[in-house]
Length: 158
Image: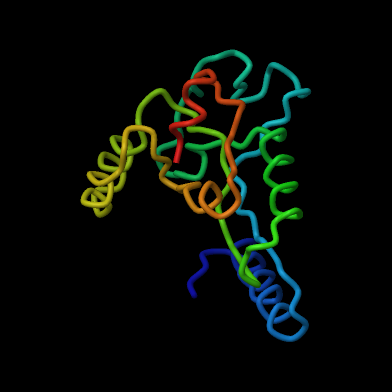
């Protein structure tokens, strides 16, 4: 594995610990990789506030993880799904997000800001996230409900 800082290293080590507990004791674990958790009860002066029904500004091109956010209510729903799931493998890592923080599609942003990912970006759908939540949808039935783009976006985001 490759990490770029001590924070990333701590995440990798914690996930490896979960894998080891699964092998040794049969403990099932889900590792959620959460993108910029938004607290709906927080102040309206946050850098990105989905309640305003508009994208973040300005977008941070060098940090694609900031291109997504996770509403805390969607996080709570995902945690409940994981706790109640009986069909999961011993260790399941998955990204969690509610939606993108920009009006511009991730496939366009990725192609422009990360030219080495252009081919992968061309295969993305218009609502796909650069850090996909497809695994959470498929394995848990996760369905985010709190998109800044409105209810119609919730079913399309992957």
